[in-house]
Length: 307
Image (cartoon, rainbow, N blue to C red):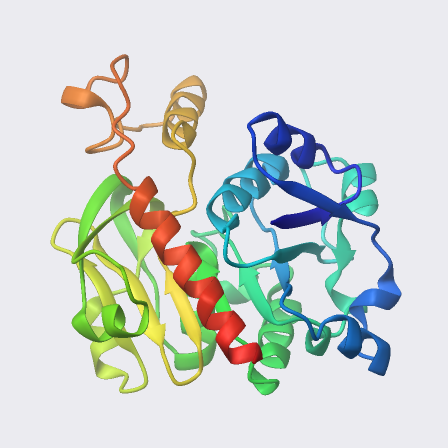
């Protein structure tokens, strides 16, 4: 079962789809590190801090919930925000009602950290207005030895911060669903994964395999001949980096494509997504089974670490 803040709109949407979603009351005292918070977090339920950097907060949250919902692991997902950042899509009232401030919670009150992407790829990392706060928060989770999962831009940001791995601007957006060969070492740790994993990509920048391979602490966990690096792992530090969006729902790439078309941007239909590459034809959602396998395997690894 998965638990979300009381009255957050996503909970009703997910329940309407048949998912088992509970609720909890947001109380800052529950997310600060005290003996009481340790006792309440000592059971089988995982407390996962979710720093949601995507513009469409509700859609991003729902996508993530659908892949985290597992019959084997109970999760309390706690949405977080930066107190001083101005959010342009979500209302200030919504953010204040359903999101905790990063600056006010204690990482040690959680079992893991999950951070998703942000549309700031073309900026240098240091130009992002919350860069220092993000680095500090990631460091606190690392110092506590807590598992971390980073998605899309957040994966690039964390790889740069922890290992100095740069990102590179692409001549054309990497956009579509691409097959990635999964490394045997990664499959041995995250049991049950297929040899080939489909991953949706939607990014203007990349990290390069040569830079990952040169860093001895990292495993190039999934690689595509078409789209490059898909998953990177630091197994010792329990950090996982997904350069795409395995959490995306079926229609998400279509939404992004038509949104950019309406804006007059130079965008091609996402590759290997629409049948026959026709934007008005059926969507081929080939990544869903593999996505759930990976996220459920990650949850089990977090639960094992907690024990």
